[in-house]
Amino acid sequence: MASEVDICNMALALLGDVRITTLSDPNSRAAKLCNQFYAADADAVIRAYPWDCATFRASLAQLATTPAFGFDYEYQLPTDPYCLRVLQMEEKGMVFKIEGGKKLLTDESPAKILYLGRISSGDMDALLTSVLAARVAADIAFGLSNSTSLAAAMWQLYERKLDEAQTIDAQEGSADNIEAETWIDARY
Image (cartoon, one colour):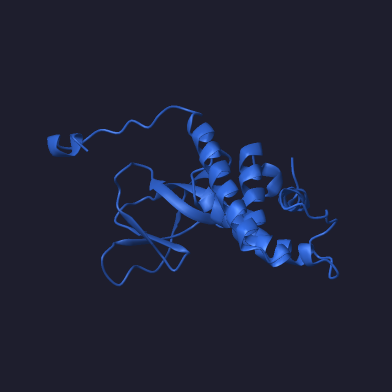
């Protein structure tokens, strides 16, 4: 399992730069840039696709407050692991809305969700690790090299790795059973 520093070193290797030993090295421009981008890039890459290794289920705690209008109930989103994106409620088709980044509003009670959560680098599978390294490389490329062409090449590499990882990740498990509700929907 790769650490944050390992993933950043993978990114630096893609850029042809030197390895770092810590993200907090004040004398290393590479370490400073990795430290600046790593956490946000990890969240963005996880939010971008329902990775198996970052998917969780939770029953939400109903809050004492209720929405001012539009929905009957308000629920607290999970913090362990921190909820990055709600994929669906227990039953597909249930209507919900996320507000304030911390609350789920719905007319359903109880509220059970499938969501993407923040995970440590050690819990990421190899494909997610590779995609994250490419994303970090894309984001720090210009800051290290002052080259827009290298930054663009790293972004293209990130997109290719993301596509490959999504294809492979999507092949795990059973396919979702999607049924059309009307004959008009069936043709789309």
